[in-house]
Length: 252
Image (cartoon, rainbow, N blue to C red; front, side, top):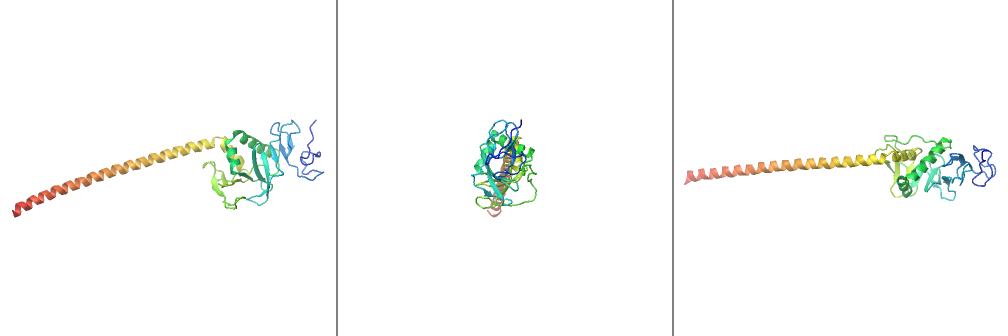
């Protein structure tokens, strides 16, 4: 027997796994996937009704909402594993504060949980969950403001070579348009940062070698010029001595 799903807000049984709203309290019902058995469950449920595993994705109803930098709709507070972030209810963009994004990048398990949750939501057809094409280098430029300090976010090619252009406030966090967070996590897990680091090390080594070559060439040219100048002075001294001797002979 397939377990029935209950509203995470009031606990009332839902008529089906595809119900958009609870018939009792009116809360919106959004399907996601259990991180353990991949069975359908409503977003916000603490435990999977199929296997009892703790739900990886939880909407923090008590968390303060912020305005989406892209469309100005409400971004609600969400938690996946230990990662807290905000997601837009309209354009499916994501905002992570600076510390949360750093920890997500550094923690392989957290990246795995986030990637799995996003993939499962897309597979189950959760509205707004299907990744769009990430903004790439050379795409149309759109500048948006940080939801915290209201300053224009800096556009950066993540890892310098990922091709995913993200919007960054160094003080407060990172805004990802739909699909960009998934692309960034895939870039990291695919070894992109390691390749970028090796490329950067190679670039810096070649730059140092180029500077060394230029310095050696400049030193060589300087030595040649010094020798030429010394030779010129020596020749001039000899000419002056011969002229002096000639004048002495002429007027003595």
